[in-house]
Image 1 (cartoon, one colour):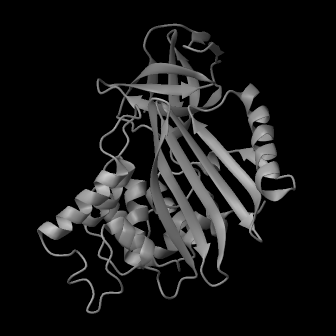
Image 2 (cartoon, rainbow, N blue to C red):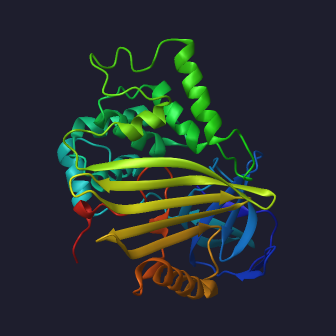
Length: 344
């Protein structure tokens, strides 16, 4: 699968920001900003934005590594393919009859960050449900696994209702409806028929309006870690910012392990992960779409480090610009599952 630029301009390419120079064979990181709906997409790399013709549809927020190729004077971006998995991950997949793809990897990522026991049936069921959501498979698989972990049937309807929170903001930051609207519609739907909890439990663990509210309140008995997800809206001048604040709690130690924050405004997206130790921030990772210029990264790392130092800790905090802060679902960030990191 290739992506080609609209037009023939070998060498240097002009974006709305500044010229971007690429060379045949160069490896670059590409972020999809918008699907134009006509076989083209607006993408970003090297600090510039470009329209490209695609052989398949992309969703806003997707990122991938690509190799630059010169084809008869036209620039082609050839995605490097699926993630190169650790050999230990591939061995585990083979031994358990699982599919070693990005969907399965996303479920592993969620399970490890959430302290969920690795369960082959959960993996298979989550991936199977996710295939009903083309273009959103990874987010759907994560949601399906969370529902299974809490003893709730991961029906297409239930997964779609939680996915709807992720779709509350379109690619231009405009409204497809607010998060509050989603919760109200969820509650109204429950009231129009019977409560969605009826029939799932012989004795209800709690009764809260809205599926996301219920997920926040219901903690799995055997799991020490528990996710809280809070959608928010923030008026900045004439623009509305929207996103999620996600807390991963250790309910046995009664501490916060990490906080994830994402914010979408206009054509920009920001992702932050704050890791805690003894109630203090010990590390911060962040990334953005479109990506920062290479020349901007160090200054932003220093600026955020000083902010956390003066505002919370009193000590220096390491801040790193990293794709690992990216989150495409309701819960986990893009951390590599520790269980499957190969040790050189």
